[in-house]
Image (cartoon, rainbow, N blue to C red; front, side):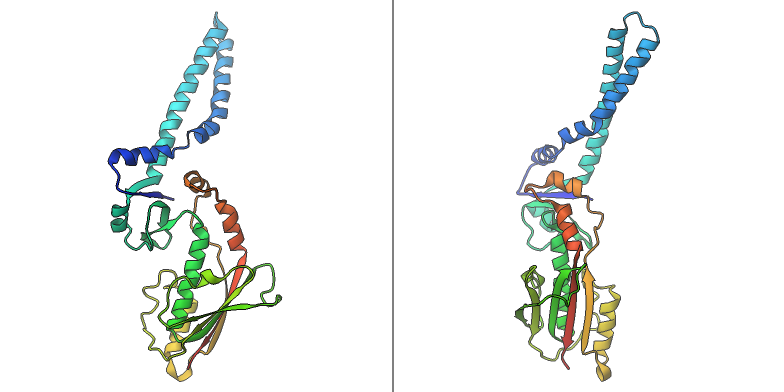
Length: 282
């Protein structure tokens, strides 16, 4: 996992300083101190067993030498690993290097799991990706001729049909994009209604999709919708978000400006199940 810090225009010295300011010295000390103490104790015991004339002095010297060597090696190795995992870049350079990032501004990011030219903020990382994926699904269904998409969300341990459901209705054109699933919260599910106009369905519709280009279900729907003699009219699929994308929660926590429990947030999201029920036009 790579951390990308986006700053305003900055010099090489400021970039280096900003990187090192994030280095977790206290955390490293906590990780290596038990081993240093144990190794120093062993060195002292061995010195005593050798029958040194001044055992206390020899033991202290051996322990100090062992501790220094261990600490220096661990600090250098840990710092090299840390520097390799952090990139500090100016906003202007980030806009060029990560040109596919939406709403790029100063802040702390990591690479998007589906696009190496796109960044995702550390804050609410998995929540934002889950909403992004849902948004893209709704938009694609609209471009396949959907009249409505009903998104029902519940805890995956419960039956989606068990609770009384009230819907927020969102009216969109067939070309709408972005910010759709974000209207949904725990007590309110979402009903998206489209204009209902006939659309010409692009055979390459999914090819440029960030999340769904290889999704077998969406490709099957696309093929069915393009077969004009017997088109699909309704479809329902349950969807859960369980991918971690090798996200390092501990590393992210070291670079977060606000106090957010990303692991707990991910666990909550991964327990949620969403049912997409789509009704197509003619």
